[in-house]
Structures are given as structure tokens and as C-alpha cells.
Length: 502
Figure (spheres, helix red, strand yellow):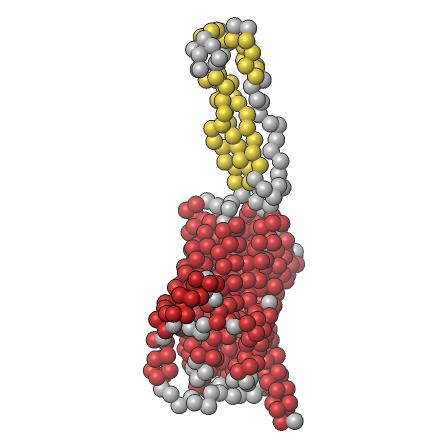
């Protein structure tokens, strides 16, 4: 009976933690929709670089403050840290409607970005209520709060349009007030109903707690999280302007498509926790990183039309051009057929399409030599980057990252049971830095290359680095500790790294 009561209390705290984290995550990704709307409506004339910074600034705050907030959670318990965070972060959201410049918007975004530290609080606060065999599932369920990004991308565009009907210039100011009010209400509920609990071994000094961060494993997990969480946060905001610019969707439709990326990725995290408990986090991460490489390689191919030289038509003999038309060139009575340019190029195709034709470059009464070019060949390869295929691939990589987020955090209570807040905060910090740097990197890549899919090139490279790093680490450990077994496994089954704990 006591165990049942304890588990019931744990589930209640898990629900409250997940609810608070969901609201925090919705607020954390607010700028993705709000800034896009303000620029699209001409309320602020920010360029693509400024937009990238405004998308990243709240993420930066949530990233750099995760470590100290994680330490505070270990020392004082999640109830007071979480409730204080919720109440304080409502203030800059209430002030956001007063922003009338890039600088003011950036400062207030930096302040309300503190809600991003809620993950470091919730990870330590949730795991302490559950035994080891439950922690993967519990942390996976808590991580479903990532779906708060879907709440913003789904609801915020419609709300902004609704508020702007009567007042197109100032209607947007209601939205941050609603978000600030939600934080205020949840903060009060948390303060009243949450039960405080902290690590039993919380007598360590801060330097002692920080010494854990010397472990290379922490930084390796942080690199994985930079990808699966940082890129998830970045694309939760970046996909909206992406769809609007590349496929000319409306703000609302673009928001729905962005929601179709962020919602499954957030919800699937609980399933990722289950898979990590059942099969091992290492095996799950191999699948996640491999799929990230493949899918990003497909997504990086831009919508494009390439024109190059094709097969031309040359004179079969020396003579005088007696007749020229779009479909034929005649030399001293001999006809040379010319392929005319197609009337139009089909659109909506899943695969690239090719068109080839010739353009006449000689004139009547012109003297030509044998093998002289009469019409130059032109080949056009058209790739429509079908929107629905693109959306499906985006959803798939989001689901992969959602599973990966749970797999990364499955390791922390196992390897660092007494420093969950510190290590979780550090890994979360690195992941949050991914959410900050990626929109900025994406904006510079877009500015440099001129095409939106350039962001996926970065994802491909970083996914490959993580996969190689993980595999090389495990391989070197096997060669060092079990060389005979390693050689045998490499020869027979090409290594099964999921059975090795690193």
C-alpha cells in the first residue's frame, strides 16, 4: 500500500512537472511565430540576420542558465526553484508589448528565455521521485513537454491574426500577455500543490559538484543533445518562415506544418524512454544518429532548376543555310531537325524532371563548315522539392530526434545518480546552445547560399560527427578492454555496440 501511495504521489508530481514544462516550452519558442508575424506584416523591418538573432536569444538564456539552475535544484529542491522561475519569467512577457525596437525586443527576449531552464529543473526534480527502472519512462513523459512548441506554432498564428483584425498595428501585443498570464497561473499552482524533494546527498560544495563535468562522457552526451534537442528547438521556429518563403504558405498553414514537426517529436519522447529502458540507450542512439544522417542528406537538396549544355545539332556538310525555323535548319536542300523548347515544365513531381531542346544559332544565307554547330543544346533539370515529401521527411527526422532526446537523458541517472541536476544542466546547456546557435547559423547559411535547405547541410555534417564520435569511442573501448572479443565480433557480426556500456 505504501509503495502504491508513493507511486501515485510520484505520478502526480510528474503530471505537474510536465504541465509546467509544456507551458515553459511554449513560451520559450514564442519568438519563432511572433517575430515572423511582425516582419511579415511590416510592423518591424528586421533583416534575416536580426530575425536569426531574435529567434536564438531566448534559447541562449535558457541554455547558459541551465547549469546554475540545475545546481540550485540539487541543493534546494525543485518546488521552490520551479515556482520562482515561472513567476519571474512572466514579468518580461508582460513587458514585451512595450518593446518598440530591436534592442528592447532582444533584451526582453533574453529575460523571458529563462523559461528554457525549466528542463534542468524538471529532470532532477522528476527523476528523484522514481526508482531506476522507472526513470527512462518518467523522464520520457516529462520530456513530452517539448510539445509546448507545437502549441505555439499551432495556436499563435491564428491568435495573432484574430487579435490584429481590429488593430493591425497593436493587436499582436495581446499574445505575450496571455503567455505571461499562463506562467503566472502555473507558478502559483506549483507553489501551492507541489511537494519539495531534493537529493539526499546534497552536502557537496559547488566545486565538488562541478568536478563531475570533467568526465568526457558528459561532453559526448552534450554533443548528441546539441543535435537532437538544439536542432529540434531551432527548426520548431525556423520551419515557419521556411515554408512561407519556399512554398508560399500562409502564416497559419506554415504554423500547422511546423506543428506537424514539433508535436510528434515532443510526444514520441515518452516512447523513446520506453525503448531506452527496454533495448538500451546506446542501441537507440545508433539508430537515431544514422537516421539523422540519411534524412538530412535528403532534405538538403534544394528546390531548384539547373540549366546546362545539352546535345546540339551540327552541320553534316559544308554549305549555305537556305532556311531556318524553330524546328528545322536546311543547308543546300538537306534538313537538320531541331528539338523545340517545351511549352512548360511540369511541377509537383516527386523526382527531378529533365527537359532537353536546341536553340538555333545560325541565320539564313550563312556559310557553314562541316561539323559546325547549327543549334546549341540546352538541358534543364527541374526539382520541385515536393512540399508533401519535404513535410514527411521533416516529420520523420523530428520523430527520430524526439526518441534521441529521451535516449540521451536515460544515461544521466544511471551514470551520475547523485549529480543529476548538474550533469543534466550541463547536457541541457549544450543542447540549448544548439537551439541558440542553429537559427543564427541557418540565417548566415541562407544569406551566403541563397537557398533555405542549406541549413540541412549543417545538420548532415554534425550528425555525421556525432555518429563517428560515438562509434570510435565504443570501438576504442572494446579494443582496449576486450581485444580478443572485439576482433571476434568484428569478424563475425561487424560489432554490436549496443551491448557495451560507455
